[in-house]
Length: 153
Image (cartoon, rainbow, N blue to C red; front, side, top):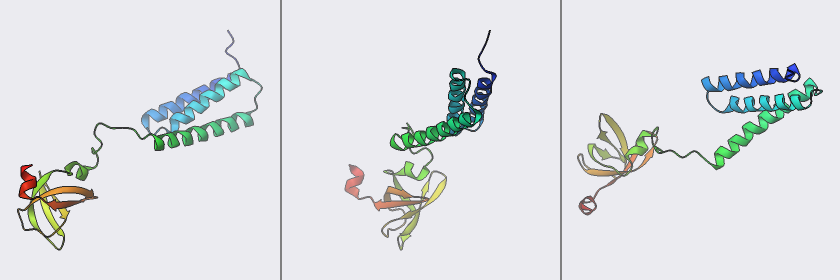
């Protein structure tokens, strides 16, 4: 049983090695290098006389094209998440109402959220005033006062 030129097996083993690296260091970079290695192995099976220079050139071009193509695709089609604010803790509080734990003086105050104290930015208000979080700027929450009519609605 002849499995073609032995050189194609080297490329397939390299493809498996790249895929194994991808499993342990995810980032879809090594995945595309593994795909490129597999394609070079198939190409070598079809054309056994392909020189090593051409094999390496095909591998390099396919690897770069696949990585760049994947990055462009991801930029145009970002992955959707059922928890878009999972790693943006401040954004999780947008729309929620809290009482000030420290008065807002010169535009800066504090609120207590669960076991964490957050700095807030907004109009000057006394301690214990109700505020609604409207935005998160890093570790600073932007707030606005809550009126009695808005609180009932």
